[in-house]
Image (cartoon, rainbow, N blue to C red; front, side, top):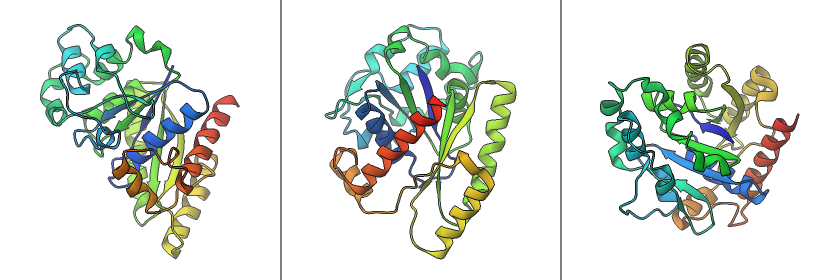
Length: 255
């Protein structure tokens, strides 16, 4: 099992769209995938058409892990209409700082949750991170084998990436030496001079870390979210791009 964080502290870069559609792409290739919504805004849960119920969310799992209670992760897994397994978020996660602040080894709480034996059936767990540099992101990076960083090809993209790299280096040095960058994914790409210049700059600086496939800025993404259906299931142009990203990711791991 490999845990991958989808992270960037900047909002609006396509983290949630990437999480769901990368999961759909990997699943299409025969991989068993679980997605985890680690954002109090619950955008991934909404994308998956999650309906409120009485089962645990990621908030209850994290809270329970801080008190040494039973790990209820098996009860927290739902499956959407495409057959994608997921653990939803809720607004209760916005209080995570309060119940994590005094926890023993507070940076490893999510890691302990994801060590449940019932998750061994998955090839990949994808964690959709919130746009923040706080304790929840640190938990995600501490629990992960690698991180995929969606970066919008617009002005100031490199500044945000530099800030995130500092956090990654800190986590790797102090908490999770196995953490690596699985790839930088260019998103919301268009035909403007700014977008092209940012793409060239990122490819020149980061080389093979940047996925060859870039995700275009198309209305398909909004429609996909509205329909609670992955771009891949919709057989859209963006869906084909995410299929290519999934293939690239698997090829990188095979090297």
